[in-house]
Every structure is written in C-alpha cells, then in structure tokens.
Length: 421
Image 1: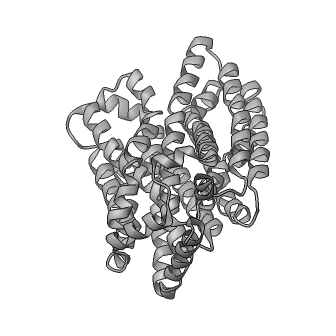
Image 2 (image 1 turned 135 degrees about the horizontal axis):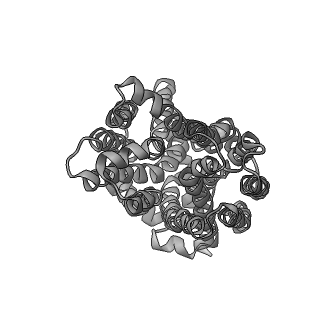
Image 3 (image 1 turned 90 degrees about the vertical axis):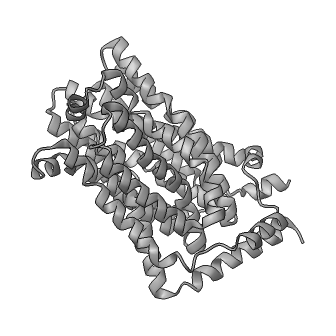
C-alpha cells in the first residue's frame, strides 16, 4: 500500500474521530480551543503598557528591557521543539491542558517571585515556553478534531488569539488601577483566563488518550515525515520563512509602535490605544480570512495583497505618523492578518495530524528563530538615526520577501507528497 493511500486512510480516520465526538464534546472542544487561543499572547502584550513600572520595580536595565522584545520568540523556538514528542505520548488535549496550566502558574508567580529581574525573566520563560508548545499543538488539535473545517476553526482560534492580544494591551493599565495601582496585580490577573483554559480541556482527557504503540506502527507504515525529513520539502521551507517574516512584523510592531507614536507627540495612553487597535482591527479578519483561504486552491494571492497594504501602512507611519494615525493603524491591522493565513496553511499543507505537528514544529521553529533579530535591528537603526524613517523603511522592505515566500507556501502542495517524490 502506498504512502498516499495510507495518508488518505489516516485522514479518513481523523474525520471519523471528529464525527464520533458528538455535539456535546464538539462544543467542549470549540470552547477549549477558543480559551486556549485567547491565552497565547497576554503574557507578551500585557507587559508593554506597564514596562516603565516593571523596570522601576525590578531595577531592570534598558538593555534587558530591549531584549524582552525578542524573548518571546526565543522561548517559542526552544520549547516548541518538544511539542511533537509530547503530542505523540500524551495527545493534543492533555498537552494543551498542561500548557494552559503552566501559563497560569508562570503568570501568577512572575510578578511576585524573588530574585528581581532574573526571577521575573525565569517565570516569564515558564509561561512563554508553555505558549511555545501550545503554538505548535493548536493546528494539530484543529486538524484532529475538525479535519474538514481547518480554515473555519483556524479562523476561530486566530480570532481568539488576536482578541487576547488586543484586550491585554488595552485593559492591563485600567485593571492595574482597579486592583490598587500595583503593577504586580495587573500582570498576575492574566493567570485567571489561562486557568479557565486548562479546565476546559479536562472533559476530553480520558477519551483522548493516545494508543501510542498503534500510532507508532501506523505512522511507520504510512511513511509519515519525521522532523528532520520535513527539511527536504520546499513547501515547508517557504512556509517557515513566510512565518518568520510575518512574525518579525508582529514583534516589531508590538515592541516599537507605541514609541513611534510617542515620538510623534502622542501621549502614552493614546500610543497604547493605537497599539491595541492594531490586533483589534484584525479580529474579524482573523476569522474571515482563514475561512475563505481554506476554500481556495491557493492562498498566495491573499498574502501578496496583504503585504502590499502593509507597505502603504509603514510608508504612512514613517513619513507622517501624526497625519492619519488611525488610518495607518487600520492598514497595519489588515496587513498583519497574514498571521492567521500562515496558521491556516500549516493545516492545509499536510495531509494528516501527524504531518501537521511536524510541519507546525518546523515552520514555527524556523520562523520564530528568524524573527528574533528584526525588532532588535529596528532598535539599533532607531538609536543610530534618531528617527523612524529608516527603521520603518526596513520594516516595509521585509514585506517583499514575505510576499514571495507566502505566495510559494500558498500553492496547493502537501509535504508528504514532496518527501515521497
């Protein structure tokens, strides 16, 4: 029996698994995926609005504060590599349950742990590492439970992720005020939704136990791609580079957009709202675009169009940030909807859940690694030129290779077929 036939059989089995969930458990999975997605970014976006208070409270140097812009991507790279083994041993439901619980512990403890900056960074690494694992496993859960609705469910969890990022950026400061003005409480409160996400997975834990021996035998018979083998796929590389470039844009914006607008004369509060508006604008698109993309033979045209919109946004921000700030943010939010497209393509470019976890690990691992340097380089350019024209030109220039690699990754290809040939 050929690898393609076995892959089709695996896909059919995944479809039967989803069907046997029943309406009640399907609703549980939908809620669990939504809650987990919501908790994949507040650990990052809640810190920025309180960074001055965090630095003062911990005695954090400016250099360390600058490195915090790259720290999430580093954690995602390092810890995301453990995801395939964890999924194979434990199943996606238990892995996501444990990841959400670990995020809750890390976020609850990091503002209060002793050791100053070192303790804060160590507990941040715990939370971000768990998020790194969940980043990889979420497309696998979508493929496993909703194999015929990859686009729709990817859109749903992308929307949840974007909502969490936006809400944390917008309400962390008001929440801190409501909790007595202590920055520690303003950061620790985000452990509560993470705990709820962990609890949401518990009804699935007993039924989702993987039969490891049978799974190993099936994957060997099916010729499923091993982690290193994925590197031989051109589509996997195109997707990895595309993922890295769009991640670079996201981290540059999260790290530096408020400073751009503050330098243009806006208050800290307004700059924070402009930052929060960027992912908020993408919330409906995060659901809509993957749904549409999942029905298309190629997603490359969407990537090119969104990248072109981003060039216009960066041009406006660099040349005249105060002229039409909300317009620039609107365009930027639309253009950064390439993130849910990247997640959708991870689910579409492999035939089976086991193929998706390997592709997801590879694409996100390489991608987040590539994204580490971009926000740091923006800071260097800003420091050297004392302005934002050159840094925003650099940010716009990265959209050209993003469009090219996204177009290539969007073609209707399967990594298993490329490896077999």
